[in-house]
Length: 315
Image (cartoon, rainbow, N blue to C red; front, side, top):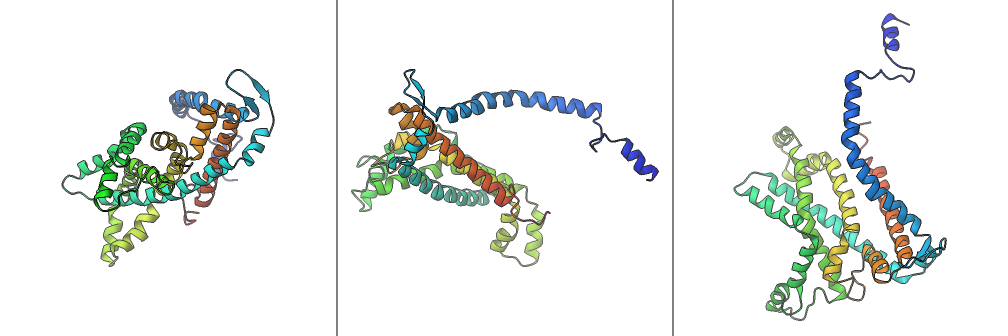
């Protein structure tokens, strides 16, 4: 063993890591103190209620103090409940359609407003504005606009000869209306996320590809999409969670799960069972299934994309 290797070995602990300097210790202590308030809040208001909800799924609770352990009865009931399977199917359609449409629209808007042109700041603000409005207010506005015969949309449809169409009253159109409003509401937020990712891509790459004769579509496919992989992963993951868990306010205000259960997504089904029918244990079981599904989907995305790294080129 050489003198250099002896010196390096002497400067490391038995675990093979270099000992922390006083400055590094202070930095770690400061980082811990900064993270402590948020970590406590996350634990108290998210982790603890989540654990209690999962535990509640094994009990029968009617909201009047009667608590009885029933084991897996809620899950057995859930597996035999056609309304649960209908809400699961509606949620699947809602997510499978909304997330890709929102991804494409948000990315297209980000590419559009990336370039500098007169009034680009106003356009960005206008596109982002719906996201800062309360979702309840958004639902009330759109409900007024889509009201049969008197709403702005209904009158416009009647003006072009499509009289009699009820966007919120038809089982075939209600979910489509909810999807379009969800995309309109959230596209500005994800546009900003994509815009930040686009602005981090070096312009020299586009200039070099332009010299090589690459078309705009070739630049987008060969440069923009690969370098946006981490941003795309973040958008896909967070938008899926937002669509699944954030549809309660919009569905409640617009349709209250109707007509004929056409818009009764799982989060609204949980609300119905808990606060309308008083079936808190059953609602907790449905919520537990929803939680496990989201965790499984997130884990699958991390596994398939390696946390946003879609290729193995960096291995």
